Length: 161
Image 1 (spheres, rainbow, N blue to C red):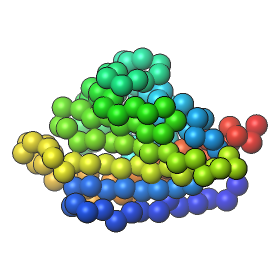
Image 2 (cartoon, rainbow, N blue to C red):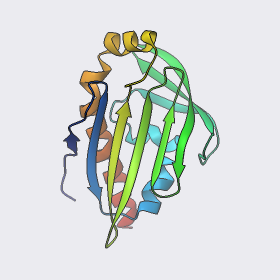
Image 3 (cartoon, rainbow, N blue to C red):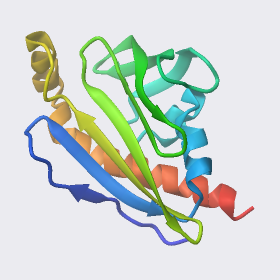
Image 4 (cartoon, one colour):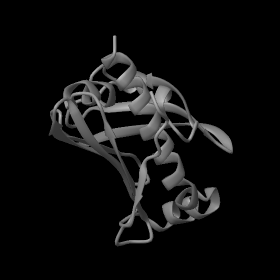
């Protein structure tokens, strides 16, 4: 399996970032990993997710799940699933109101295009301060690209078994 980089996408807002990759695995397999919070740490390219703390084994619209995180300091964050389209799209947000989303497009022949996006375009003032303090907007494209490469490696590894 050859290492591949994700494509960093241009967005229409300074507080939005996105990346895309093609994975040689069915959308259902990829979605099943995204819909299970206990897998998130394994493909997290930012290495900020330390573990899944609470929540269902499989997410659904309105589901809440918490993660132990660390960006400079350890903390816990509670997320709520705000978009859930089986095998196509999943998104969640938390108190700061920014949103992480994964969109899957079945390309046929067992290949799926996966786009990860981060949207902090409509967030409270204190949340803007946190983004600036942590440098998240500068790091997010690289971290999302790494997450997608990790997700690709996991899915294609399973798919080759």
